[in-house]
View 1 (cartoon, rainbow, N blue to C red):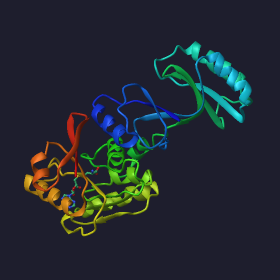
View 2 (cartoon, rainbow, N blue to C red):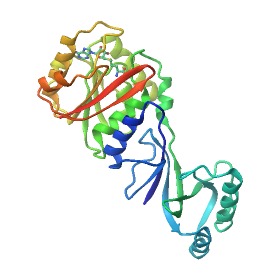
View 3 (tube, helix red, strand yellow):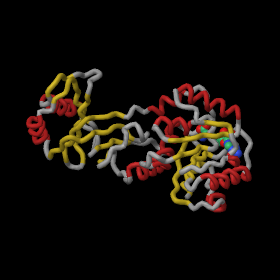
View 4 (cartoon, rainbow, N blue to C red):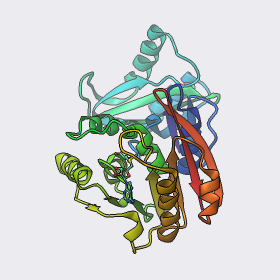
Length: 304
Ligand SMILES: C[S@@+](CC[C@H](N)C(=O)[O-])C[C@H]1O[C@@H](n2cnc3c(N)ncnc32)[C@H](O)[C@@H]1O
């Protein structure tokens, strides 16, 4: 069993819930949840950390007794109290960390320990296990050499990749209008099988440079969505908005129609609701949410 601590910012509520639904099959109502399967701690941008649960107890005293009989031992370790139900007072956390640390064999090490043991009180019981922190790699991806003012944020990009793949590691994804590769980079960093295309050669050069900068394989080619012949399990399209470059509703409709030919599952990101265009292309709408990037409200529609 695994305890995940989670958080999301204002404006991300619906996207957060949608990602949790497709990745963990839950509808979270607290700042944590317990899962009977493990998903890599770095995967979701809404997961803060995870405890790989080793022991549970009804009271702290019972936990101490269990630790005494288990004789847990580590080369070097640190105990950390994880806030779940509410934010516990600093001194009390420190006391609990001391009580637990005392029962674990090995060397307690504050800086750079080999193992961090997480302890928390959640769902009416004490929970202890190895603590794994999300390294938030998507933040690092903001430092890509080529930027694009209309790009999705790396955080939104990561969440939408998780929404289309869910837990199916074999999903073959395409981003046929990939811009400078924000979605492609997030997918590659999670080991997702993805290809990217863009009609604009300058943008494609920028995308290739971004991939190379982070050491990811070059999976992006110059290409028009209308000419893609291969079929994919899912497509992610952040449709041109006409903010920086000129676009028309005709062009947008053409892109959605072309998507129908290459996949049976499309996640469409758009500035306006595009239900009519989606239905006209022969898709049906399976799910929908919105997310804010600054003042821009973006619609996310799952079309099947
Ligand atoms: C909103 S941008 C995508 C931005 C991207 N998500 C990112 O984060 O960089 C839309 C992209 O669609 C591309 N595009 C427009 N028409 C296209 C077509 N027919 N085939 C492929 N790409 C196209 C544009 O060149 C533009 O880069």
